[in-house]
Image (cartoon, rainbow, N blue to C red; front, side, top):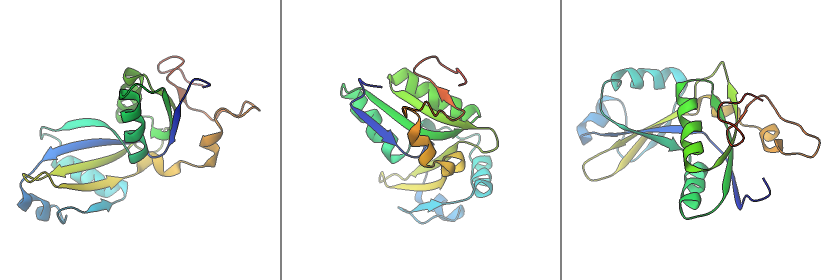
Length: 166
């Protein structure tokens, strides 16, 4: 990772963006403009409500967004996080691979990839309903992927080879 100019550490979330009328926010218990952090069970209920609604899906998390922008401006970057070993985790990893970002992510079998429902009202205000999922387990050990002693937790290095389990 010597050629990396920026390495981000943070939450691995898949953003799911929905355009909604303002009145709909109250129906699902949200106040316009807030960011509500919820457990996975509450997130599942919202996912079921919006399962058939048209939406945009993209990788997210504040630090990840910074890394993505830096890369799109021509920088060489990497990102370290924790994802669920599920379809959304694979989506997240593939998007980073497609963007040319070195991703080091432990993939957890027992927890879903974190998600953020981003509800956008006609005035462009964002209201978020977020569940950290697997990324809640991001810990100091995940920062040590490239330590000289060779410590490498079970995970995936998507830059070396897509979907190669280490």
